[in-house]
Each structure stands twice: as C-alpha cells, then as structure tokens.
Image (cartoon, rainbow, N blue to C red; front, side):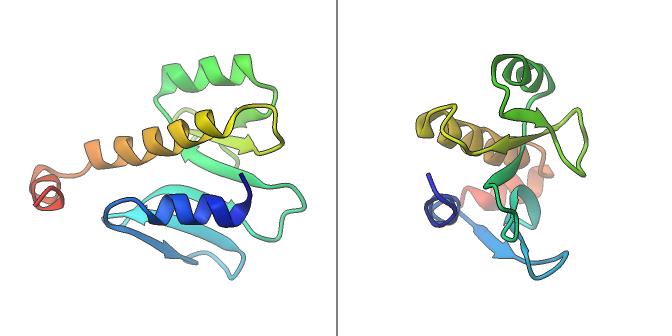
Length: 117
C-alpha cells in the first residue's frame, strides 16, 4: 500500500477528515475531530502512526521489526508502522480499522450516538 492508497482507505471511513494541523507535511486523519492516523509526507520512508490497544501494541512490536512505539506520541497507545512490505496490506488495513474504532469507542456517549445516526 502506498501513501495515496492509505489516504483513500482512511477517507473511505465514516465522518473522517484529513488535515494538516501541525505543519504542511504531517497529514492527519481524524474522526469526529479526534486523530486516528497520521503520516509525514516528507519522510523518505512511508511511516504511519496508529492508535492501538496497549496489549496488542506490545504483541505487534514483538512480532514485527517494522512496528515500533509511537514516534512523538504516547508510547503506550500508539504505534509507528514502517510500510516496507514486512507485513500484509490486510494487516495494515486491520490496524487502521482498529485505530479508527478505538477513537470512536473513546468518544463521549452523545457524540457516539450522533455518529451512528
């Protein structure tokens, strides 16, 4: 998966926006105003930060050399994935979905109710 395919996949999700809140090269995807994915467009390597359940994050880091603690993020709740072909696009999409779902789950009840209307 390349950057544009990643972008299209993220934008295909319900109520997702793309923004550049930090600078002109850090692309951030949000659901209901909360980040679930980001990537640096000026990196020579394609890397993505995704939110992750802490236990699953540890498992992934132990299983894949290309999955590390979140760079400039909470090391407990975020992973940085280097997209280098060492894991499948299917797993990558599952991890994007997982991040998206964690953010929705963490939204206040009223916003979650509005989200599903």
